[in-house]
Image 1 (cartoon, helix red, strand yellow):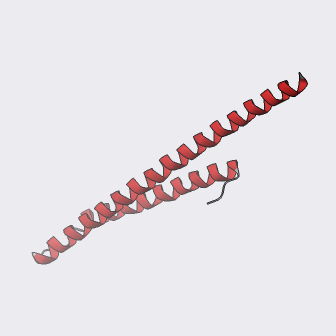
Image 2 (cartoon, rainbow, N blue to C red):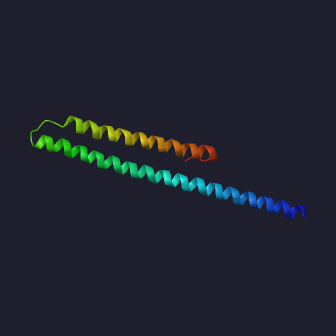
Image 3 (cartoon, rainbow, N blue to C red):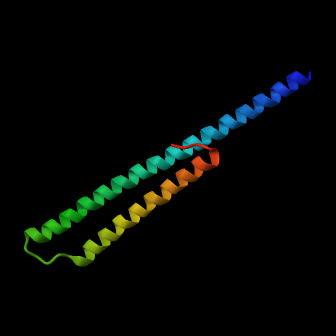
Length: 100
């Protein structure tokens, strides 16, 4: 009977480990998707910045410095978000013993 009890405990432990790993992988996947979405935001903001600058240039107007600074600041913030998200991924991987 001791053998069956031990086997049952090992099976329960294995199931718990698998569940934990699955949860970690899902969280890492969610965070990577968040990075991809933030990168898309950066691309959109850079395009917007280019349009603002080009429109002012093509109309021989002064550059809208405040608008340019705002967009630049938004882009910098998005890069910071990516770094924070990467740190979260690294934290999860270190806690679970994974490396990528």
